[in-house]
Amino acid sequence: MPNFLPRACEERGGCPNRALPGRRKCSIHDDSRERDNLRRRDDPTKSKYNSAAWRRTSDTVRKHNPMCQKLDEHRQQCRYPATLVHHVHGSMTRPDLFYAIYDTEGRSNLVALCLHCHPPTEGTEDWQEGRDFVRTAYRMAMLG
Image (tube, rainbow, N blue to C red; front, side, top):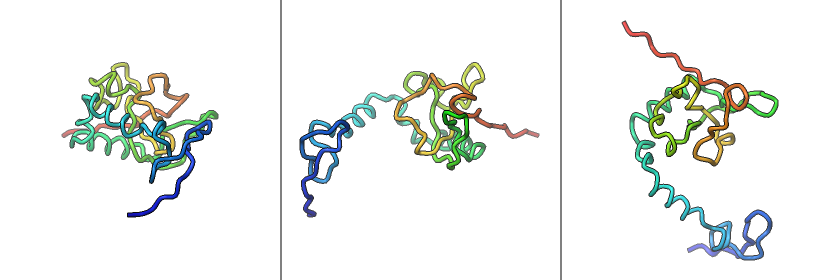
């Protein structure tokens, strides 16, 4: 079993307590595991993220949008490759749009992002195409 040296809690603002062994934060601030467990328990769409339908949808969005779609404050597109797909309308607030590339008004709902640009929030309803991200490209295959 490895021995961990005591280290200072890495909570923002400076916490005088020591971090838990093998952790970065003290027992007061190390609530990430509990928060994740609560989110998983309360999220009715969690199982959808493990479905084949979501993997196909996510792969399709990233295939058509290989670069991160996030725009910076100067409206320059991020230059990193997209590694995940973000819901503009959160999956808990709008479960009907979970697999929808565009929302009911034709605006992008699924946005391909790099890990750095992905927000920590569930949804980002305040994001707007052209201001916060470029429109999601998607072209359906023609049949026949």
